[in-house]
Every structure is written in C-alpha cells, then in structure tokens.
Amino acid sequence: MTTHERPFGRYLEDFVPGDIYRHWPGKTITEYDDHLFCMITMNHHPLHTNAWFAENESVQGKNVVVGNLVYSLALGMSVPDVSGAAIANLEVESLRHQKPTFHGDTIYAETRVLDVKPSTSRDDRGVVTVETKAFNQRGEEVCYFKRKVMVWKRAGAPERRRPYSGDPWSE
Image 1: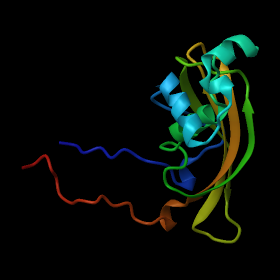
Image 2 (image 1 turned 90 degrees about the vertical axis):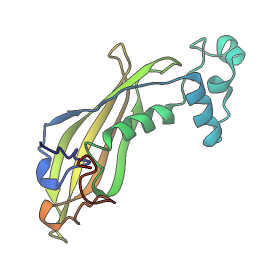
Image 3 (image 1 turned 180 degrees about the horizontal axis):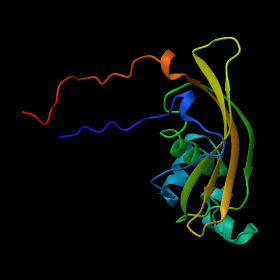
C-alpha cells in the first residue's frame, strides 16, 4: 500500500519561472453566493443585488457579480498550488477585471510563475512573483492579478505535521 500526501503550497525551490498551475476545481457563482458576499462586505450597490435596477438601469441589463468575489475565488483557488505553505502574502501589484461575471458563470483559474528570488536578508526564504488569471466557462478572461508571496526554502521550513498519528485505515 502507498500513502500519498497532497502538497499544499510549495517551497521556493519548487517554483520555476514560466511554470503554469491550472487550479481545480472551478466554481459556479450563484445569485446566493453574490448576495451573501455583498452583504458580508457591505457592498450594497443595486447592480449586484437588485434585479429590477440591473435590468432597467445598467449597461449589462442583468445583475453583475461583484468583482471582489471573482478575485477572491481566483485567489482562493490558487492557494493549494501557490501560497498554501507561504510565510506571507506581500503584495498585490495589480488587479484588473477584464469582463463582467454573471450569476451562473463558472470561474476557473490558472497561475504563472514570473520570478523567484531568494531573500537577501534571510537564507531560509524567498519571494515568488506570480500572475493569476480567472476565466469563465467560455474561456473569456474575467480577472487578472499579479502578486508577490514570501515562501520558505525547503531546508528552512517548519515541519508539516498532522493532528493525528498512525494509520486510521489499518484498524
């Protein structure tokens, strides 16, 4: 029998400029998701929460998903591949919403490694620069952001432990 550990995040040595991580799974954004996110973040703009307003007073003619939800989903999708073992998220250099997202759209994301730099002040870490793109189910790019993440070098990283020991399947 073989036990497979799923990596959650990467060490500095695992990042190679030019590599692309296709994040899985995608997420279909429901009206409920959009309204809940708007209420939690206190964004009460009627474009997102009022069907009559969106149909009669907006360019799109229907509710538009709030952009920060699309960004948050793409960022969250990237965590297992990019920043799951990070020391810190340092910076979001840019954020662009390319096209509107609507209720019922499914968002997918992928991240490309742009740069990898060992720290000049601490030899146990470094900074990775990545760009993430979110696409809808039609393959249209709806969101783009570039960010910097501080990650451990493998030798300097704290041990990854599970909250239990042993093999729960052997009993």
